[in-house]
Image 1: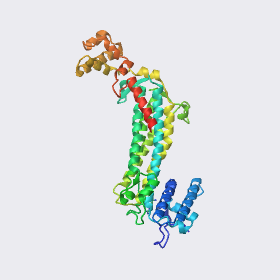
Image 2: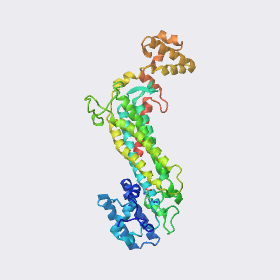
Image 3: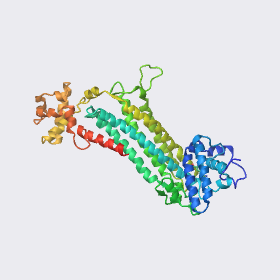
Image 4: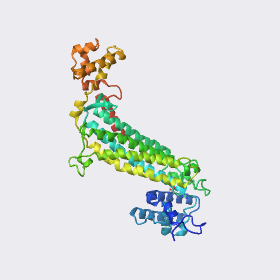
Length: 461
Ligand code: ARG
């Protein structure tokens, strides 16, 4: 006889296709340890309410401990007749402590408040693990910045050469975005740290059970204030899916750059053999698959977010079975990041940067033109005029295939009388970079300070 949680009013069991549609153990089994933790806490409040004797509480906890160990070892597994993780674990408990005692545990709780609570617990642990993985990626990028304190590259806008910047400055820009992803997960956690346990099916419990005690035992900051909201709301799930999708999108931007940097045309980097793949037909190939999978998976995580939002849209309160569809997209987003983050950290930490090539390209494409204009502004020339003059320098240099630093004294003064040879102090890549020394700028001292703050942020988490 399979253990069903709702057999009483039914003359027959479910049709095979009904049961197959309903089944969720193939994905919700990962909630089992959390379900058992919830059962332990629930048994304690049943005892506090006088619904379990001290001896019964003891035996219940012992039975749950054995069940937890059997789940952990794989000795206890869901079977096809177990509709979901909660059903399977009730069967497991009845098998271990007997139906008389085991049958008392379900008083005052519903799978609706259970699953809402367990999903929050699972996600809170998972996002902490993801955040740690993100910090490893940040450490890999900041480590590269530290290893190449003087390296420069052409900073780009519209993918065109724009202004020279320190390589470290560029890498740390990605760190900033990823650190915000980590802090976004922390903000999310503060909102998610409330337990729906005790909400029952939707209306709350009549048995004198204390939701705050359960919440505290399960590591929450408190119990939800509204039992309908507790069982019906999944914005915590959608918000986590957003945080994870945003993270994946930020990773995809790093990844896209690695893919471009690794082309023969750019030649900025070489991938370590351990973090690249070959081709089955072209022996010379060394492909940036880690980065491409990062780029690809970002689309998948966006899909998980939009799919979940669509599932939630217009659902009436409180619980509807639609909500069973909330878990797989979020599980998948976490699973993909569990795979991706260590690979990204490995790939980024072992990249070889070709700093001579980067230095050679940094001034190419007249990236120092803005420096001429700003130097003139410092001499009291209005920016509109300075911009014109600098543009004329570019035109002159371009016409004779020279760099801005190769213009003669005469060519400079022809562009503007205030353009004395002293302008050449900013017509070198290091000079240009050193001049951008306001907070957040690319000057070496500012970048070093920024890097120290990034390392401090990693330490603080
Ligand atoms: N497995 C369901 C879920 O994940 C919980 C069970 C609620 N079932 C019900 N008929 N109320 O949402």
